[in-house]
Image 1 (cartoon, helix red, strand yellow):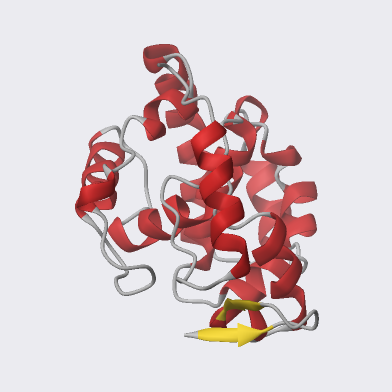
Image 2 (cartoon, rainbow, N blue to C red):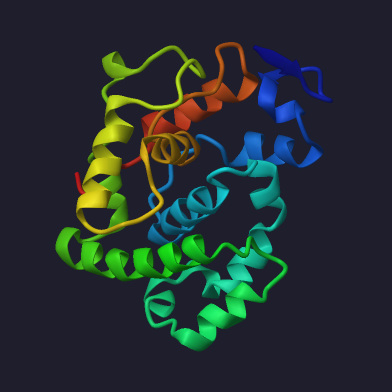
Length: 201
């Protein structure tokens, strides 16, 4: 399923659902990421998206960054009662008590993971599925790899990150190329993935 963009080129249909989606689709979604801060941010934002639309989260992304110290996990891990109260009063973000608590918890778990694995990037990229394990683009909402990564994160104490949420994370961070066949960006992502140095390898 494709959408014809303003330049006349075909793109994933979802990118035409809202004006702000186009830039995100063309410049971010699916391109491989090895930066721990960006990866942690995306895990947090995917957690906040649970039950909501990505449009809601994307519109508030800069507010989330301001509220959560630029998603510096070491900083967030030190958040206390006053920070929790501040976040619950911040109308610029999603004020969900359980999700805010999960983000602070996950920052603490992130610190543990980095000590154990060297980096979040090396850890998550070790779950990159093999090409033969992938379904047709945009036909599923979970996978064996997302189930395995979600299970391991849960085992390590992370919260609000089930297989579907993790699959969306893997799509967005380039662990798979899930751009629709025929999408003008699919080839760009494929090229970026082929040139990408996998962390920890």
